[in-house]
Amino acid sequence: MRHMNGVRRSIFRRALVRDFVVNRAWVRRARIALFLAMLSLVGACEHPPEATSSSGGESEKMPFDRQPRRGGVSPTQAWVPSATKLPEGTTITVRLQSALSSASAHAGDTLSATLDEPVVIEGQTAIASGTPATVRVLEAKNSSSSVEPGYLRIVLVTLKVGDHPIMIETSSIFAKGGPREDPNTASSAGPGSAHEDIVFDAGRRLAFRIAQTVDLRNSDLRDSTVH
Image 1: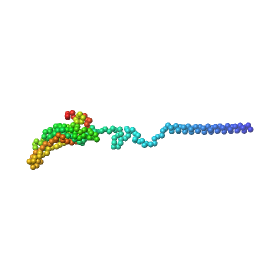
Image 2 (image 1 turned 180 degrees about the vertical axis):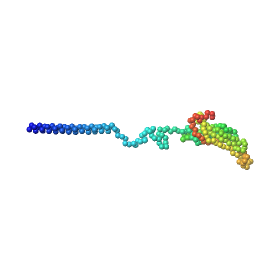
Image 3 (image 1 turned 120 degrees about the horizontal axis):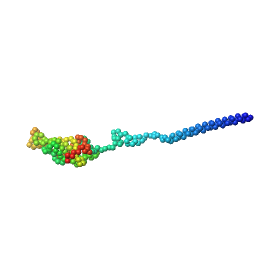
Image 4 (image 1 turned 120 degrees about the vertical axis):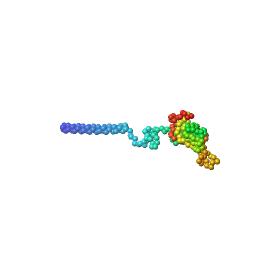
C-alpha cells in the first residue's frame, strides 16, 4: 500500500512538471507574438505613407526648376524691351527746314530737318516727332550746261536724341530736274532743249530707310561734330 502511494505521488509530480513546462512555453510564445506586433506598429508609425498622386507635377516646381516653354522664353528670363534699337528697314520721315537746290548745293553740304512722324518700335515710341535731324548732300550737279538736268543725292545722317546727335546710315534719295518748259518750243523734251535744276522747298517731306540697325544707347555712334 505504501508502495502504491509513492507511485501515485511520482506520477502526480510528473504531471505537474509537464503542465508547468507546457504553460511556460505557451506564455513565452504569447510574449514573442505580442512583442512582434508592437514592433510592427512602431515601424508603421515611423514611416509616413508615400504620396500616391502626382497631380501637382510641373505646377509645384519652383520657377528655376521648370523647363522653358516651347517657342517661348525661360520662366526666369526677364523680357527686355528693344525700343532703344532701330531695326534695319525702319522708315524715318523728316521735313526740311530750309530749301535745297542742285543749282547751289555741293557734296558734303548739310541742312537741318525735323522728324515729321514719331518712330514707333514694338508699340513704344523710340523717337518723338519734332526731333532734330541732319541731311547731308552726297552728290550735286547743276544744270548750267542746259543739256543735262541738275540732280541731287542726299541721305539722313543724324538724329538728335537727348543732348547728342546719333549717327545713322540710311538709303539715299536721288532726284533730278526735268526739261524746262518753253512755250516757243514744240517739244521741250527734244534734243538740245534746256533743263532745270531740282529744288526741294523748305517744308518738303522726305522718307529715308535705315540701312543698318542703330542702337540709340551706343555712345560710339554719337557725333559731336554735327550741331
